[in-house]
Length: 482
Image (cartoon, rainbow, N blue to C red; front, side):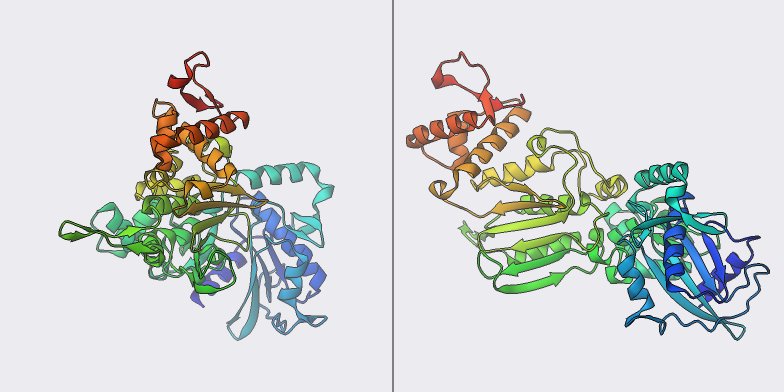
């Protein structure tokens, strides 16, 4: 309640209504509220405000508290509660919350509206904007519309606010700040002020104009004790599903990791490892556990899914699915680089701040070498090549368990041949019949089969001879782009 009191007092002290603030006394028309949400969200984005506000119970001239009889929870439109009706008619990026408070015996209702992200907020397929203290159609102001889109395209998800108006100790209680110091192997400050200093420096927490604190989306995603405490990012929690067979008919386990990515990452990888089939061969006097999949490949694949996901895609988060013969890791969004150049390209992330902080906290290297390690670790176990499938709004990476060479499809054999050529090339080497046989765990007697595979890969324009005039016995091959 204290934070709402402080917020109302702060807003009342402004000299006038603004493009991101509207005081109301008795106008409860649902269509007007919907248009105002669109206008205020878009104006807040244009003016780089994290939130906009509509407040019922404040006189719009004197800013005195006059109270309101409006109760948005019981206000219905048709058979729907108002909030539900509004969400159906606003675009999915519209985020708002009704809050109520009693101040000096008078009821005040506050509608907190997050700024537009990724695209404009529309109501009934129409964009609105605030011009002074009035709500207008955005299409009537083409220059403002251009400025707004420029702002939306340059604003990053990490910088938006996941939870606001918190006391310092409340903000720290929502995140696992100890893990930050543990991973960096630095002593943890003994005071709240010292801890808050580091959290602000890393942009995990910010100080607000009213003296309270807020937690950024990046802070919540990486360090939340419970992601469900942060509705804006709760759907980005990692889900792990284990199936009984090679299809999705029978689910054995379905678990959602509640903690932030950095807090939970090591435990998440160990949890996945515990679900994998494994054996313990005895090497001398020691037992060594061998899993059906290289843990390095799993680690890199999951880390990539977390770091490179497209946070603008709502209602979806990273999913790891375990089948009896493969592991599929899916994340929202498609790569920013050409999949065919995923091994040799420089790194490129749509979430630069998250990638940078995760690199400094040793979760990733941000060197663009993750796919080198995934490919090499699968080759070391002579597994089929990891596969990348792109969909409209998702990327799926599949790691396969051991499969006899004769059972691998020709398409996947050619893909394995191509990836092998890529990793050889970045190492300053080239693919040969011998290296490709070794990659598949085949004997020298299979040289003819590998020669046919190489020819198929050339015909598919995936690889090419390094020197076309070399004698066939000494021929080496490089990726098509080399």
